[in-house]
Structure formats: structure tokens, C-alpha cells
Length: 444
Image 1 (cartoon, one colour):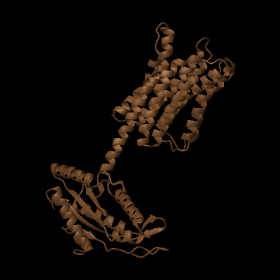
Image 2: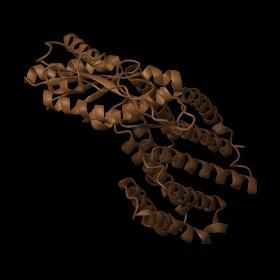
Image 3: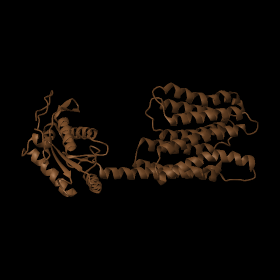
Image 4: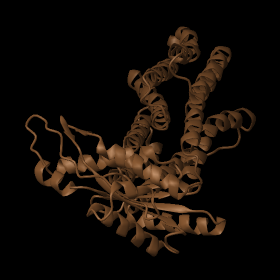
């Protein structure tokens, strides 16, 4: 038994437990893959306990240990693939996982399996290239080609050095592990392109983890008298774990911030974020001496939708309206849900009263069409819209909101007609329309 790995095993077990506790707070596919990866690292260290056992069990333990180390890198790499849902991605993951497992297993078996190393090394170059070329007509991504090139270089390296007398097997092992973790480092660098401590520490951790498999053989070749404790070589693992935990915390904080500023049902900015964006928009308009338009939209008879069809259908209507509003305005504009059935639209420069009126008419027309909210239910719903323009109608944010609200309520309760939309008051309304009759669906 190799009892010297017990401290590392205990540390990794505690680290995996801590990671599991943190990952439970933000259960995503990525966090689950990371957790599985750390559990596989526990398997790696557990197998190292038995590598000194004579006979087949020692060989099996070495095979599991090397395979687990490659599996961990593959899982971490897979978690950072931005195109996992692309149909050829599972095939690429499968062939790489299979090729790595097959090759390191042959290395663990030793000289008895050396005859199979050449075809196994060729698979590293051929299989990823075959999957990439097969999917090339429908999918192409630079990360895919990075992987193909890395494994092509690995294949050439193995074919030249794996049968080298003395240290050929060691060089092959280090080359495989370096490729796995360097590819992982590249994927993480691509997907986490942000200036945060978690991203920086994780990427540096993977880079140093990959560098271990270059540094170790160089030291054994040129400085054999220098002895480095195994704990030093394991430090990159702990660095990666710390970085991943920080990433989970950062994403949880970002998620909480998003929830605080966005409506949970529609995903649109809520009143708090709307006021912040409106204030910034007015400040920009004041500085550049341009105009900003505010549209206040109230859905007609929305309460009747809830009362007759249920709140679930009302929620679907709100989500549908949010989607069509977001699709209608520019990316530089803002659509917010500022009340139960109220929406606000901020139109920034370049805009004018005329363009705001056109947007209002467009939204009016969209809401006059039958809304297919799913579940076989189609409804017709109207809206009342009030438009106010800064600085013509109001000198500040509060006054602008009051002006738009007043015109929206005037339109809603019939003080102005639809034909008045283009006048200075810039109000609009549409008659509240009845839901379309559908089978088993009550009238509103």
C-alpha cells in the first residue's frame, strides 16, 4: 500500500465535500460536471493507494489512476465547451474520452501491450479530425480546431517517442496529461473571458496543472538530484478548486443582482432598473441636447384575463407581451415591466416625437392581433399607451413619468381618441377587445 498519498487523499476528500456544499447553492449543469470531476480526482488518489500492490491489482490500480486523471480533465474541458448542445459535440467528447482511456490503460499494462501503442497513438490524430470533418458542413468553431490541432501534435509526438528506451512510457504519459489539461485551460480561457478573481485563478491553475507534466520530466532529465515533494506537484489542483469555488460564488452574486433588477416572470428590467436607465438616458439627452421618449403601456382588461382564464394564462400573456415588445424596439432602448400589467419603454437617441408615435402605433397593432399564448388558447387584448418626450413635455424624470402616466390613463378611460396619437399630447388607446372564441374557452 502507498500510504504516502493519504494526506493528499484526505485533503481532496475535504475539498470535494466543500465544493459539493457550494455547488448545491447554485445547481447548474456546469457545477454538476465540476463536482463529478472532483469526485473522480478522489478516485484517482484512492487508486494511488494500491499502485504498489504486486500483480494484476497493482496494474489495475495504476490503470484507474491514470484514467481518472484524464477523465477529470475531460470533464472540466466539457463543462467549458460553449457548443455542448451541437449534435457532434457529444461524439467529440466520447472519442477523446475513449482514446485517452485506451491509451493510458495500455501504458499501465506495460510492455505486454506495447504493440498496440502505435494504433492507439494514431487514434488521437484521426478520431477528432474525423468528427470535425463529418460535422464541418453544419458546424465550425475555432475551439474545435484547437482541439484537433493539439491532439494531432500529441499523436505525432507519441509516434516518435513512446517506444524510446528507458523513459518512453513516462514521456507518453506526461504528453497525454499535458494535452488534456492544456486543452482544458484554453477552453476555460475562452468561456471565462472576464476580469474576475475566480476566472483568473482557475485559468492559471489549469495552466500550472498542465505545466507540471512538462516540468516534471525536464527536472528528471536535467536535474535528477533535485527532489520535489508530491504535495508541490498537487498544488495546481487546489488552485483550480479554489478558483472554481470563487467562480460559483461570483455567478451566484451576479444571479442575485440580476434578480434584484429584473422581473422574475418576464426577465425584463423591473421598476428599480427602469428608473436607473431612464435617469441615465435623460442625463445623456440633456448633455447632447437631444430627445428621449417614454411610453407607458397598460394592458386593457388584463384583470379579466386572470379572472376568466386563470393567473397561469395571465402570466403567459405577460411573457408573450414582453417578448413582442423586446423584439420591436432597438437594442439601445429599454423595455421594462413596471407594474402588474404595465410596461414602460424608453426610446433613446436617435428618436423624436414622430418616431415614438410610430413605435406606439406598432405596439398598438401588435397587441390588437390575436395572441396565441399556448395550450390551445388564443386571446385578443388591447392596450392604452401614453407618450411623453423629454425635454418638450417635462424637464426631469419624475415629471416625465407623470406626464406619460396621465396620458396613458386619459387614453385608457376614453378622454382621447386613437386619432389623437399624432398630436402634441401624443396619447393613444385601442378599444379593449374580447378574447377569440376557442373550444371550451370562456368569453371575457
